[in-house]
Amino acid sequence: MGLRTPDEFLAGLKDERRVYYRGQQITDVVGHPELGLAAHHAATDFRLAEDPAHRPLAVIDDEGAPYSAYFRVPRNPEHLAARSQLIETATAEGATLVLLVKEIGTDALFALMRVLERHGHDQGLERVRDFHRACMDGDLALAVAQTDVKGDRSKRPSQQADPDLYLRVVDRTDEGIVVRGAKSHTSYTPVVDNVIVLPSRSMTADDADWSVAFQVPADTEGLTMYTSDFLDGGQHPWTHPVSARHKMVETLTVFDDVLVPWENVFYDAEPEIAGDTALTFVEYHRFTAVSYKLPLLDAFVGAGVAIAQANGILGASHVRDKLTWLAGYAETVRGLVQLAAQRGQSENGIAYPDVFTTNLAKWTFARDFHEAMETVQDLAGGLLVTGPAGEDWESEAVRPVLEKYLVGAWPAGDRMAIMNLISDLTARLYGGYQAVLAIHAEGSVEAEKLAMFRAYDPSPALDYVKRLAGIGS
Image: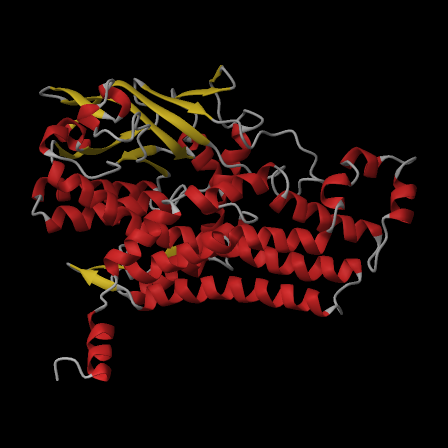
């Protein structure tokens, strides 16, 4: 098949998957007023392939049957740069909210290919390649369940009082493995076709039953998704111009004695591979992360300029200083993303972004994100939280009052449109969601700094300093 239309993608979600939302089992995620919003948002990835303006970026046409460019195995820095541009473009089309139904799954597939070939795991590598081909041919949407619920974080998986706090294998049969446990923070699980499961950490020999990687269809028996309601719906589109139309869903993804056929198992009881998988996966996923953050930073810059104009303060020197800082922040992150691709390296013919530069980009983004939010809020003013409701704006009795008294250098309608956008991006639920993502998503700030420390080779700088100091000469 190669490519699916948005309608074909949405139709594929109507199956026997078990999804709970606010205590109720949802039998039709597409028809649900809130989960359906997430499904239609995710369908943007499929609409890109149909849009003539985006098709050259979103579709690979030169290798036989056309297929989604997300599934192209990167072979060089140019492929990495094109992938980053696709992720950035898709997120911009999603109004600053990442789509993530093809991005994260292919991050996992590329990592598994490298790790299994590195370890000489021929059977697992063949299974990953077979599944990758099935994803290309079927144009599948994918989620990745990696983060275990962890329990007592001072203890390893095998040391937990409850062994199910890290996902584990509880039985092995002729048909396959049986797994039990839960994964948290699993993005878009209710609206994908298949779920890839990866270990979240390094393992020891005692943790062999927890050292497993596999994939299953989303409607597999025993798999249940408990969906967070944090970005709940029902907002007025006037006051919530982004979050009323676009939705992310996260789940606690529970595996209750799920049978995984052997052909879907990438490896089992391989503790020496588990930690390597986790680290290699984030080499791609943090590159994906900083790529999809760029439209949000562009929105901060544009909103800052717009509200400064609307409020009539653009001429103030401190305002220009704030806007210069915002632009410098956004372009620093963008430049580091591009440099990570340019510095990309290759392992057995598969390209990956430079580890140090990728983590530097992610750390720079996370370190300064809350200051960027504060800067935009400072430029906007208190109307971010004291402004009128959408129903007020629609009221024939109230609107003339608002148009008279909420005017600035711009008409009240235009000024409040920018004010509401900034409020949605920085002060309401969506802004809070993005603020938490900046700290925790795709790895913590400390994890990024640790990755930088591991990846950086200080020997050239050290040798240079010794020469300058006359040491060892």
